[in-house]
Length: 89
Image: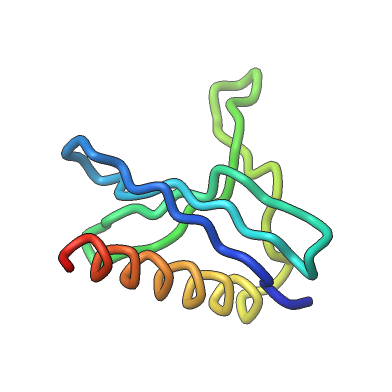
């Protein structure tokens, strides 16, 4: 599986959520609404989720293992950082 496109939409207002990201896998499958969030230990991603009937939020798409999640997070955060540099120029 290759991430063939990453699209970052930065959030203008103040808060913990910094961007909403869409990724394309193998030029064939898109996942929208991945959030870039600033936490106590730095930036991380949150996969798209929806509120269940019990009030809890459940991911509707997510990596199966931690190595895939880490790879996704690294690629997404790298693109987010690049988008910040482009904004500064």
